[in-house]
Length: 461
Image (tube, rainbow, N blue to C red; front, side, top):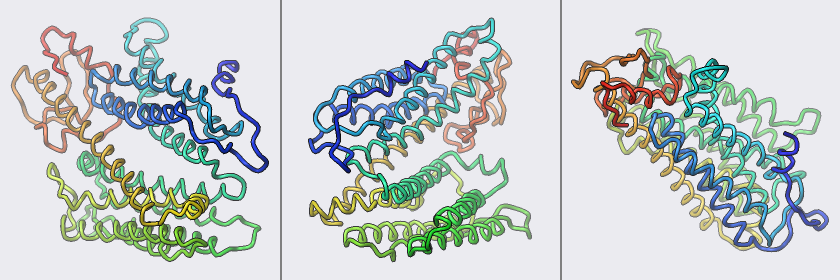
């Protein structure tokens, strides 16, 4: 195992100039091919395969196999490039074996499940393997995002020595805003039933995360034992307002008079407070000041849009599908935009822009373009999931009711005694309840195939 690991980590590196982490040559064609192929594999193909797996679609295996082939190709290209060279032991190369190990393990478990082994040790741990397969499938896009971020800072040789701390802050906080936008988009499409079953409002979970995140930030933004700086005061104060406002929001998330969940504006106000503070954050370079200002404007915009959505679009009610109003897309997009802007506002990146002579307006437009493409990919993946599960709903309607659509049931048991997932029941295809987000597995991810082998069930998946 150690020899395989060392093979994955091995890479020919050249001597770096003193104080440098890359050589001065441009990236060659092979390195560009590595970047494109890996981005397509881990940013597009594997997420599509994950969606097909969650929806129990037959294309899950071929899509994941395609992603595996692309990833393997990109891996070897990354070790064959000329042109710019990178220092030995850079973070991107160190993290690569872990990503490939997860990918290879995921493929291996998928093959085992596909073989339908019904005897011996593997048969006894099949359900455990299914759960591991699901968990790794969900974690892989997150790990891939981190690895692509490592690649983005390795190419220019950023985030070393004194720059590491602010790189981590920008990467983690920016990714958090993007993840928040992603989650809000998911909840628009498939979260209605999930919230109903837990008898909570969206703001309850938002405020819970804000509170926990604020507590962590309060005690980690300043290096204890060191003198306090302007940045320490600013970031620590933002942590304090987060957990203070978060606890208030948690209290307001329940209507005690009517004993029911209640909407509130505290998460939106936290966005506005944070956006305002960051927009006023003075920087050493004009381009950095302007990018931070735009980040603050985007975040404040997300908060204002959310207030309008809750109070005037939804009138303090929970979102009820299937229709999603155009206004409701603005908050997730602005969160994603603010996250991208913050991730791209590290001090080394700003210094590079200043040295090259690129104006802040041009850079902001490029970052906004990337945010648009990312939001497009998110919408595509969620809509794909909705459409595939709606198709499965039609199929289960035939299986459960012998050809005639029947009443809505939260748990459906088809011939053979297999209990299906809650979101796969015989509700109308566009009923939000039919595509509720629930990751608890009630059967293996190949149960749809086993259902197809039943002689009295027509399989259309």
